[in-house]
Amino acid sequence: MLILTTILALVNFRTTFNFTIWTPFSKRPFEFTIGFRNTFYLFFAAYALTIIAVSVNNFNLGVFAMLLVFATTLSYYSKPENEYYVWIYNLKPKDFLFSKIKTAMLFSSLLALPIAIALSILYYQNMGLLLLFFLVGWVFLICMIVAKYSAYPDEINMMQGVLLALCLWFPPILIVLIPYLFKQSENRLSSLLK
Image 1 (cartoon, one colour):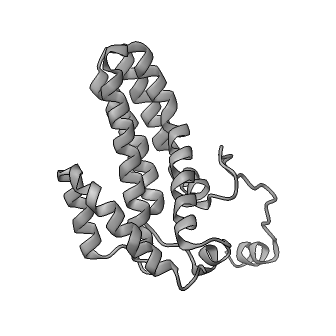
Image 2 (spheres, rainbow, N blue to C red; image 1 turned 180 degrees about the vertical axis):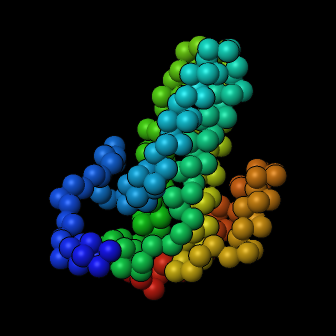
């Protein structure tokens, strides 16, 4: 045992093998790059659910798969980033928020689009309902982004969590909550972004 431990202490076990999961996103929206690498298996599960929904003729399961994609992208905005990553944007707070929202809507749409296209082709009679759920996914994503930055640089607090939970229960509250949180976000970000 003594000889084996001496040999192992003298041997260097360096590996040059590094494996990075490719993402379909650029480096700019780090939330999606990091989030996708941590949750890529959930997208495979959502796409598999879509295939099952199509094969068993279950539109509701397909909608659930699409909402799973949006719920996964919502989780990317749950933790605040370092202040430096906000400060490096040379934008006003309103422009910064619009940039974050635009990026989130674009990339979440790219991830949910295969499911939406498959469901809209096979269930064309439910196209309006599918579009409604797609828009609801966007609205909750916007709400999550403004909630994150309304508490910035801290994490989302208890009151904001309760408001977000109320929105899940009664979504029309979002009409009032999003502008309120957007204004709070502008105020919180004004010290970093001028």
